[in-house]
Image (tube, rainbow, N blue to C red):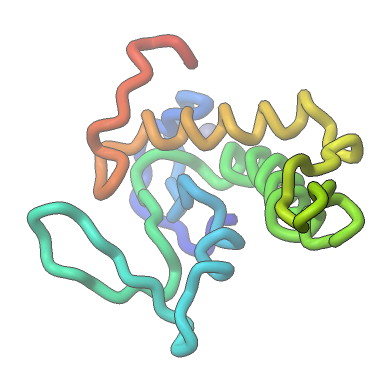
Length: 142
Ligand SMILES: [Zn+2]
């Protein structure tokens, strides 16, 4: 979800010239789950110094608030499915020694979760910053 408005540029989602927002590629909810006790993440990139991050990585040059808000619907579903729904022990099928051999995903809307994953790839490919600068889908997703 966007949390600040930046300079006006062409949105890479809709093409409109608008103020762009600080759009996360990986939804913020996923960063919150990975944060350390002080609330910070360790931002690591090869060849660079380790940095603390409280908000996760975002790109202020890819999406307007309208496009970012549309994607937030997918983000909420992805976070709900991936961060909470598999915490229920009844979803795990175990073998005779207790190892997890399967996870019940019958509750997951396959089309919605696939759209969520594709939206992450798409946003990563739009970004030319930080950890996503080398993501290139070669025009597969537009
Ligand atoms: Zn837009």
